[in-house]
Image (cartoon, rainbow, N blue to C red; front, side):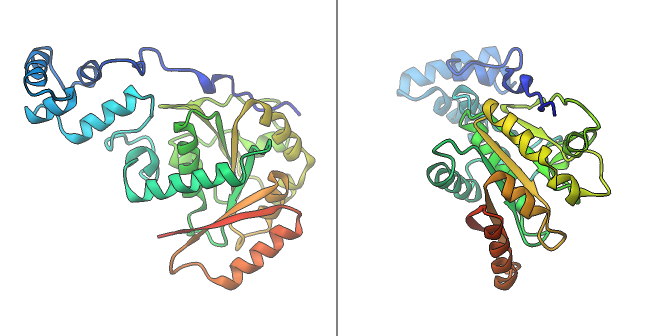
Length: 292
């Protein structure tokens, strides 16, 4: 089985600002400041001993969101303006990185780095009992958050029944994981998701009539083994437990699963049953996340 190729996942878009660019240059490049505005800002900055962004705000030339966006680019911390329509609004780690929800997900990221992604571990499955309990949302945002750290991340949509990642990231769902597992293709080129130059997504692929059998093939394990050396983090989004037992196979291949739950939606009995079934495969239940 030929592994997925991700040679383009570390490509930086031509002309993108470097981290050492002056914030005024970045604001000009974004169309927020005109060349004639620079002198006014620099004069006020010197007179009142302000930062450039503070001076520009006091003059009413930019707002706080403009400054945050420029700082994100200056520090090579990729985020997205709310007007971006290609990517789904669910990507709050990119669209609203300073929100309470994004901060909570950052705390989760830190816990995963300390508790799971160490001692050589690179792969983690993410699942849920039901289809409305946020597993795809959680997988997508964690992928973005790890990419924002500069980690080389691959997000695999292993939910062959109700795939969602192609919609979240604005990708076409052509050939993907199912086609690789069925050996319908020898290789696939996985491109980076811009502006996250270290994040790539492998979509679910062609809708198969036999998802459980495809995922149970040894090819999934061999595929992950070949992908791991080229990535720091591999996340697998899985089908909900209420639909099928696919999640058990994926958890076994990944070695561990993070369970997504939703407040006032998830129920303890199905969660306990899912946990027991994951443990039965020999995989570890890394934890459970409660989403609002």
